[in-house]
Length: 205
Image (cartoon, rainbow, N blue to C red; front, side, top):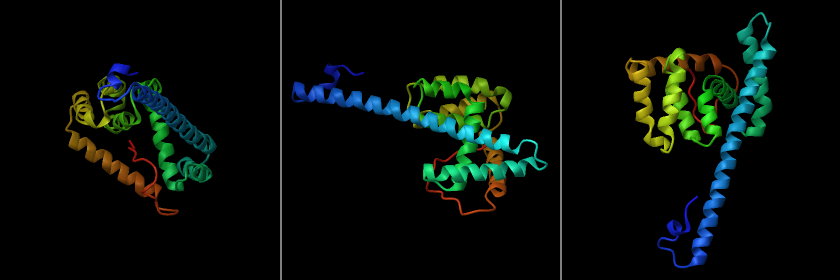
């Protein structure tokens, strides 16, 4: 919370200072509510992915069965989220990856130490770090993000990833991009065209 003296710099009256202070308080409340809603959405989508996995358990062609189950669940949720089925499938996979593979990031996000932009960057860079080293990357990355805007920490997170896994960033990024392209061909070869306008850009590992 800002002090009235800080808020009053350049203001014309005490009433203006009070009005601005209230606006700041309201903005903080809205920001907290939005963050919690975003986190709840991620957990709902991750749970949808778990449900698809459970529905496919025991099937003779488990990968195909999971894709079919995921498509059905995504179709049910698409209307709620005002997104295409394919976008929902992607977001479900991303949410499950985040919840299951980035617990430190989720905890920091829930506590308000980082924002959604930080989370996206950590997930983007983290998928280029070996699973065995990811917890260390997460810990350092979250600390680096605290108190900084997301667009100011991208290079720092890249350097952290490179230090933990000393291969060139370009090599690892090309490999990850090739993997995403292959997964994309397998995932999007049927059904309606993907709507690139809705949903957030994600990072498949």
